[in-house]
Each structure stands twice: as structure tokens, then as C-alpha cells.
Length: 423
Image (tube, rainbow, N blue to C red):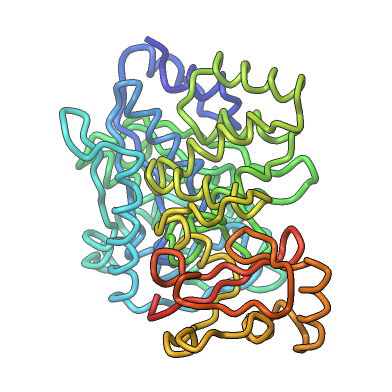
């Protein structure tokens, strides 16, 4: 059976690892953990890199521990930050942690002999006395050692508070605590966490005389040099209320040909042979975007469910030129309504027949009634996928799809919807 290190290495997911990790994994699976900062009530796609590492740890026989920084999240990790973040209320951190747990269940199995476990460092750091912390952890680290950490050194000119300066020690204490209580021998994280991880290894070695290991994953950047995980709207969230499943799907579908192979290796559990096959298809027929579709369907299906994938795929097909909008199911129309301008429509307006020019103006697809009439005369508008052939058309209840939707279209890509009743 391949070890965790073997599996991650063949997927190009190892940036660095402590000496001796390969030998330790060769002797058998380990318990390992990754930490997550609960500053939001959702993970974003950038967080999925360490989540996937924990999932592979479990799939190769190990036991994953998800550490939510309920205590350290009140301070904030200075790694990669130019300024100190505002402190969060404890109730906010607790609510965020609960929401993150639900998302993690899509990737980790919290039952069975290798059940994933979720821990919150507020359970031990929250009750820790300052003098006990200084005696138990602080005395094992020199100021010089801490100043060598990139997360601290990079902030010296702009300023760093004592609270953030102590973050590396707090994370080290977490590793040592999990080593004692959970038998945790490995911490995984992004490459920016190397300093914090090695501090934990140092504390375990000096205080407990034991050996622990660290493994960091590479920072993902796109072929264009941008940090992976951002869209025009900002972070791509797993929470459908923050990033709709449709936009989530489109994010992966729009992956650059130069990036898609790496993204398939990083964010899916697909066999490497299947990924190679998809990449070969992309080379031979780039326009089909088979690798991107495989990526989008796999990741969206895991995060939001296969039924959601069906709906967003159909919505995407309809929004990109299909003419059979009238046959769309209600759940697909609901997806479309979340992605295009939507205007409320009173049922009474349909009773007497609503002039289609008025509807186009209300929907924002025409700048004036005169503009609407000109477009209608030129057959530039469509209703429920069918071209409108004149300015005299009136909308009635018979035009409602599933009793509540009307889809209006200008050209090939501009859509709006009228909806009867509350969404």
C-alpha cells in the first residue's frame, strides 16, 4: 500500500517534509492534523489543499484530526499578513467552527475505525494559565529562534503585536498537546506554515523527548502567476450562500489548460491514469474542455452533491445558447434565476396581457420602449428560448414556465427573468 508521502508526491503535493518522515510512514499509518482558522463561517477553495492532504492521510490508513483554532483564531496567524487582523468574538468563532465541520464531512469520514476527529484548541488554550504556558512552552524557545521565522521577520518593519508574536508558540503548544492526547505525530499545512510546524516539532522534542514530523504543501498559483482560489468576486467559497453552485462550477470549468492537470491531481481523488487520459483528450481537442468538465463535475459534486451538478450543468447549457428553455425543469430555472437579473412580476399584470416591450424595459434588456420595439422588429429578443417576431406580443399566464417564470433574452448572452411570487 502506498504511504501518504508516496501518494502526495506523485500528485506534486509535497513542498517539504521533515527528515525521517518516509521511514516513519513505511512502518505504518500515523495520526496527523491540520489547523484551520475559523475567521469565516465557510472554507474557501484555497483551504481545500490541506483538507485533501488529510483525506489522503485517512485513505492511506491514517487517522486525521481537524484542529479548529477557536483560541488562536482570536489572535490570528501573522503568516502572509501585512497587518494584524481584528479579533473575533468567541461566539462568532464557535459558530464558524460548526459550519466548517459540516463542509469537512464531504471529504473526511467521521465514523469507523479511522474516524476523523475535530478538535478546538479553545478547549485547552482557553483554560491555560499564563505562567504555566511560559514554564511549559516559552522556556524552550529563544527570541533569536522566533525572529528567524519568516512569519515574524516579515512583519518587523511594519510592526507586530506581542499577541501575534506568540502565535508560533501557541501553535507549537497545540501540536505538543495533540501529540500527548491523540498520539498525533504529523502536522500538515501550507508552505507558509513551515515555521509554525517546526516550532511544534521543536517543543515535542525538547519537552517530551519524542519525535514528530511535518509536511507542507506547495502554494498554488495559476499559470498566469496569480494566487489560486480567487475569482473576480473574491474568494470562491464552499458555502452556496457565498458562492453559488453555478459560479463554483464555472470557476473550475474556466481553468486554464495549463493549470487543469495540476488541479485535477490536487483537488480530486481520481486515479492518475484517468487524469492523464483527460489531459490527452484536452491536447487533442482543446475546445471540448473535457479535463475542465471532469474537474468541475468532480469537485462541485463532492462539495454540493451530484444532483446540484446536474442542475448547474443544465443551467449552463441553457445559458450558453440552447434554445429549449421552455423544457427546463423548475430546479434548473431556480439556478438560472440566481445568476441573471430577476424582476418580480405581478400576476394581475398578466391577466390583461403585459406588452412585451414593457417587460423588456422592466427587465433592463431595453433602454426605452422605443429601443424595445426596434429590437423586436429586428427579432433581437427571445421569450423562453423562442425568438419574438414583433412588437405587439403580450405576455399572459400561458407564458409562465412552471407557473412562475418568464425568461427573456437579448442576443446570445444577455438574460433576465420575470418571476411571479417570492423566490
